[in-house]
Length: 392
Ligand SMILES: Cc1cc2nc3c(=O)[nH]c(=O)nc-3n(C[C@H](O)[C@H](O)[C@H](O)COP(=O)(O)OP(=O)(O)OC[C@H]3O[C@@H](n4cnc5c(N)ncnc54)[C@H](O)[C@@H]3O)c2cc1C
Image (cartoon, rainbow, N blue to C red; front, side, top):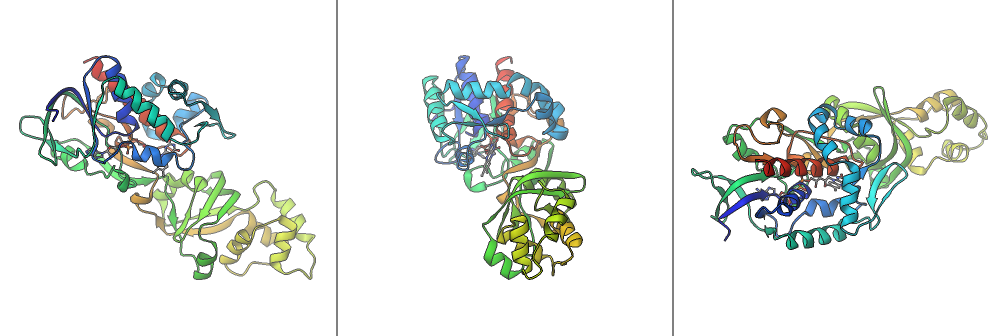
């Protein structure tokens, strides 16, 4: 049982592990406590669909993705840049490449080889990782407490406990209670990068759930995002929806519009529809003139009987209204908005209410779209907190 250490890090996700790496490299005794039987489960899950580590867009545009949190994160992202993250991955033997959209991935696409090499490095640096160690708060003497009755005294503590999404992977947001008890200001959790519920007809749901709408533009108020949207049992999800999910969440119930042929202007769509044979059914005409998929054609019909006149039909194809009833729950979201308020930490990410305790990663109150911004934010805040602990 470890009952005393220089630095205790609670949470073995990317934010906690990068801090452990930096602190141990500087000679600190570091113990990482993780409640799950193994580490970095969300990081491994992120690698399932292709681990998007970071993004290559210019720093100003990159920063704007963090919206109101950008001024807080700017110095941290400048100190641990997207290039630094790529260099780090390559230092662990994982070459990276830039995808067509500017997103950065390891060539292996998965997180597991990177994690394996990372854990080897941590072991070589004498980092102790204790799994099945579920932190619950502090005792009267300021020691960290765990569900198995262990108590640990640490000269400095980093909390890197993640948000509240996908709780089965470990980060369940239960840390809110001990922090609230100690007077730490928290903002409510909200789902980020999340799908939305839609009242699909039974016929449409049964036939199309699980199918992607490719190459569409999803529009809401003045914003339009090109990409993919996935039809689900409950509604809609996918990159183009996630990119708008912050504003959709704030205005739900609301209506999005989908442009099914964003590569064509309205006049071109009208011209193509006008060339349809009068003997063709509507479905055949849409398939032959515009190459629309059975899913896209059914989606047009899902909105009510489609007009036959080319002008009115083109208007529907270019801006098909879809009513969203509500966001899906936090447990199904890719990430979490809300958490430890920026006013609760100083510029070193140290909790004002609990000196000597630092916070990093998704548990801080920031959100960003998918595209590598989430992991970059976690690595940058973890590295920043480590630097602050070292300069104590
Ligand atoms: C399906 C999916 C795909 C994703 N894909 C990408 C992607 O491609 N690119 C990208 O940038 N981001 C992606 N993300 C988001 C990214 O994985 C997270 O933002 C990131 O893992 C958060 O890192 P973290 O270290 O802050 O927290 P986490 O990774 O959540 O780690 C926190 C750790 O703390 C532990 N913990 C929690 N409470 C306690 C406690 N009381 N005691 C001890 N331990 C505790 C948890 O078990 C967990 O291991 C994806 C997320 C999901 C769900």
